[in-house]
Image (tube, rainbow, N blue to C red; front, side, top):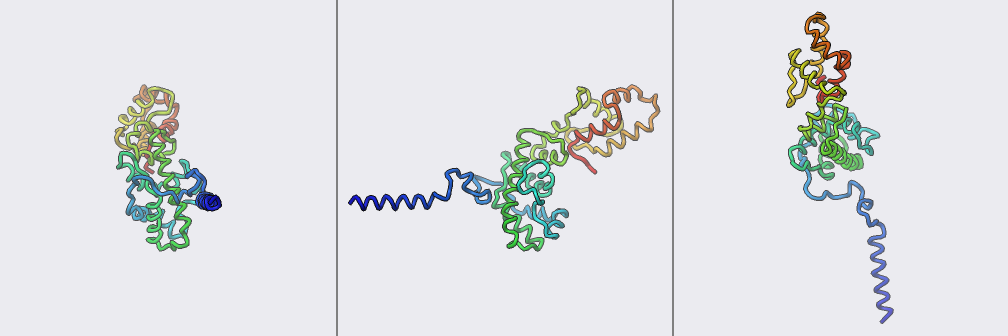
Length: 258
């Protein structure tokens, strides 16, 4: 009798060991990133591969046989990596922006769209399975990184990354336009310069930086020293030179039309 109970106990113990011995208790370390099933609702990204294919830069990259993500970036999540892959991120972030809680796309959906993107460009998907799996997981992390920056209202000095953040949170535009110079009247001077030289500074619209700067510098070269002398003196007292003023605009305008 005791032997039968002992045998059943040993059998149960062995089954428990075989079923759990290879998996740590912490699920975070048990599953690979691409094996974790999406929890809860996810962003609908159906058809986003067509938007990727519409980008000439991405289409050329695929047809040259290059990987989806740039080499050396598949384990890095930072501002520069997001900027390097902005062509992928912009369509995803635009869809996230329409939802109040900014849902992230699921890894599985990203995989499917990446496979379709490769197929459209006549790539051999079978040989790129691992690349797709890793790229999908990393793409979701990049979306989450931009979402975090937007939620924390942490503007970057990189204009291209500012554009990504503003896709999610357009209301942060005023924060990005905030002057970084010490003088408290510096932003008022910018507005004054816009009106003085016929350039409109509407907070709800992007500034055409290149046009603005060119007009200001050209105006300063054409005008006589006596005309609007006080206004120019005031501007130069804050910005020292026109080049400093140009740098000020460069650092504070979130969208740069080249």
